[in-house]
Image (cartoon, rainbow, N blue to C red; front, side, top):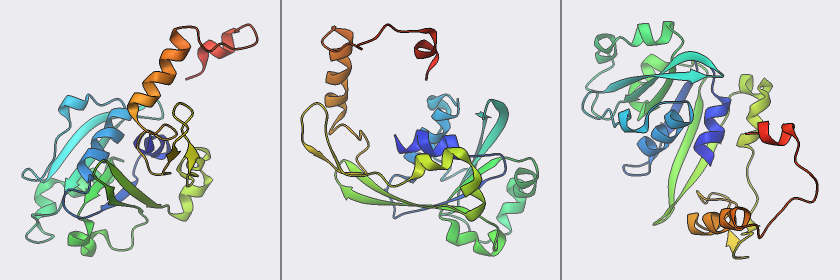
Amino acid sequence: MIARDFASVLRAGDLVRLVGEMGAGKTTFVRLVAEAMGVDLSLVSSPTFVLMNNYPCQINGEDGSIAHLDCYRFGDEDELDALGWDRVCDDGSIRLVEWPERIDGVLGDEEACTVRISHVDEGSRGFVIEVPGSWMERSSVLALKARDAVKCPTTREDVHPECGSWPFVSERARMSDLHGWMSGKFSITRPMDQADLEQE
């Protein structure tokens, strides 16, 4: 899943600009990123009316926090001061900002990752992730490499690279594949060892 892969790349102090039209899925993406970082999904909500939510999280096994900002209703950039934006910037929170163009004057030329989300069809979203140069040193950044179109291992249908269930054509196909392992239809050809059990 793209959100989980993206979460693995994030570090304390990162700024992420989330760009997309209304209803593109920016808040849903934040929810899934936060969940991948150990945040209880039921606690993550849109900050449209409160403007900013903060969530304690795990960043590479260390305690950290996510600041999720929705700037759609911002009257002017001075409102950031009232929200404690300076504190959020100073404490190393990961900052995920929806509608960042409304506070460009404050963000200035701070190095940021930009995630552009668009509708592909009713059930799919397209992602274009523009990674800043400094992120290229992170070993996990390869998880953000563009995917190739593939054939679903269960149905043999074509799977779009931006499909949320990639490399499977659907969650149903993914679960069918899992059932094959659980029912004994699939097996590995060598004895399992402790290293296999410890892999995530």
